[in-house]
Length: 439
Image 1 (tube, rainbow, N blue to C red):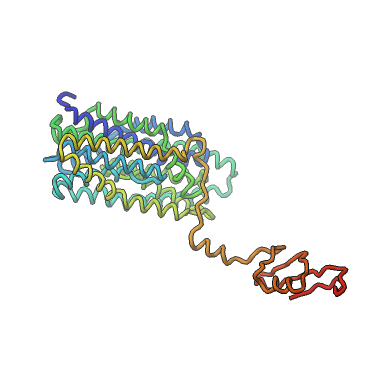
Image 2 (cartoon, rainbow, N blue to C red):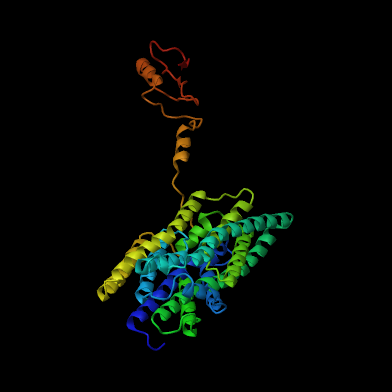
């Protein structure tokens, strides 16, 4: 760790802060379905996930190599570029956390790196083929593959267990969920923790501390694993709520199928060195499990918001990182200003989140979404229910009532609202005995 300058030290700390936000942003990937189905209590679930994320960080370095030497060219990149990239990634992570959207921390990091590198050295600083083959193609294919696998697994589980005792099978699937959630946490550590390792390694290379192409030092692996584990333990309860309850209501069979499918896809991608978005994989798997259960409903409004967030992640993080890089180019004062803006932005988002906090105590509460335009229009033309209703003074019936000066005892309005029965008071000199007047 010798020859580390103050600026490089700040970049390393900022990378670990990103790793921390990645941890609480992505806790939902492993534990949202387990918490929503009641297989584990929230605090127990996040503690288990944190430990397994730490273990997973030591299992592979293939993804770290993709980040440190694949996405952007190391030659000619300044340490400030890495700092600007992390600023864009952190702010986007915090913003989507505030909104409860399970967007991709991985793509936020990629967008930040690309935006800062392009601003600093032009498009030649980006390895386009690596971005396409190891970022964009997996981003499109992985959620679809995981969703289809989860849908088929869900259907299979219901077919196999259709004659089994419901309580016994639910108990068995909850146990399976705990195991599969552990597998997702382990897979998350092998993929997402390594992204920060790769960024720190890239910073060390640009700072001439280690040689290009080097593996992450042991202290980098330990610190990155610890940071993501701590963030995971604190729990991103807003995103856990969206993933566990916002997309669909999950039964234990669905949770087991979704987590197993997601873990398989993530582990395979880590082995191949694909820097996969675990968020997108798990979201696809949860959606697939909703489609796989007969009678289950997928909340497509939530899914649409997630898709929009996914589409915006790369360019949005890239734009913020590019703006930060413009500032850092101005010299020391620009780098300091970038750091101040990062702290101020993070503080403002945190303060905003305290107005309506989501905690371990209300994580499984689901807020009712406002009606859309179509739903409101249908409700507006729905016939009124049968039974007594108050007469409208603008109708012809009210005009007749005013002429005869009768007291309305009851009014029965049919679906067309054209027929009203009026009761004329007894005892008057011109009153007819108990005969109702029908208009």
